[in-house]
Amino acid sequence: MRILSVVGQKNAGKTTLLVALARDFKRQGRRVMTIKHATHPAIVDTQGTDTWRHFNEGLAERTLIASPEQRIIFERSPDDTDPETLARQYFRDADIVLVEGFRTAPLPKVEVHRKDVKLPLLFDPTRPNARNWIAVVTDDADLRTECRTLRFMDTMWLSLLSSLAWEHAKVLEP
Amino acid sequence: MHSAILAGGGATRFGGLPKGLELVGGRRILDRLVDACTEAFGEPPLLVANAADAVSWRPDLRVVVDTMPGLGALGGIYTAVRQAPAPVVCVAWDMPFVTPALLGALAEGLGHFDAFLPESGGRRGMEPLCAGYGPACRPAIERSLAEGDRRAIAFHPHVRVGILREPAVRAIGNPDVLFFNVNTEDDLRAAEELT
Figure 1 (cartoon, rainbow over the protein chains, first blue to last red):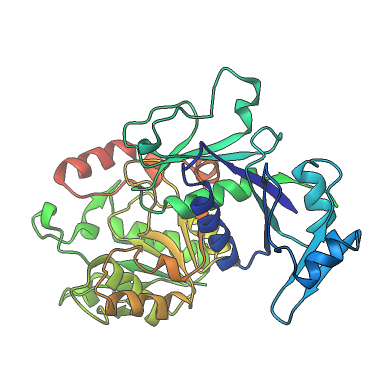
Figure 2 (figure 1 turned 135 degrees about the vertical axis):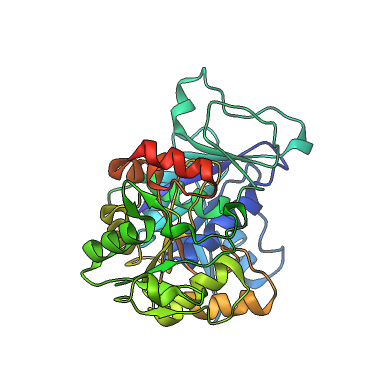
């Protein structure tokens, strides 16, 4: 199993980039699984539904909604566990796990940067974690940085990015 | 695994002359490439060429004209995929320094991908005219051509695309030499210096 994270400033386009990468890996026949880091409590179920009551009134440790198309599991998270532990726990059969957020986790990273957001890159070559950056992907033709930079206008940027991402993703031993 | 030499193109920057018949290091570029392909795959390449006298260039090769002429590089790739047939490693006939090791590495990539292109690190970035193409490319290219998109990479969104990354290319040779292509008389002189 491999793992890497997609990072970027707010509204830089992290989700869009993660989706593009996920689809590209999927097309290559890889088993792709994803983690989204949320800083606020996730609201999926709403008050009053049967499963909401199982979990919130019955205080079930875990609640599973099982439908023919998909399953959703609710589980109390006693702490804010790191993405590698989560991937090992839930995604043992993944080829590649793409993580959105978890900016501070020591994972290889792809940073997405958009000119209009007008915020600096997270990549900082003076910081020790700079070596975790696989690449910066941007729409800014003038962006200059010490990190490998791919531009959305480059031909084959996505194929190159998925190739780099696969190569440099962290390999987690089972 | 098959190979194909793409001898299409109007060679407008080369006065319309057949570029691959120029000598580099005392041998025609075409002959250099035929040798590289034969060494890599144990059989001679297919020659995709539209010129009327193409059969006389190398009478020992099977020569086919573009299945759908006038479609540029993508048309050449398509013809190779159909006629070689795929899986096929294609190389444009203006690249005198492509080596059997490079062709072999491109063929190997087709074990996992439908299209496998090398990263040259140069101005072009990727080299669609020195790349491997598998059978899944055929319907994907047909779709792109039907949509009127003739870019050599137009069909990529519909197939599994892999890249022979620059470090792997460098392990084979200097990409500036491997992918050097002869477009002008100046290029031909430069190629001579590189031999």
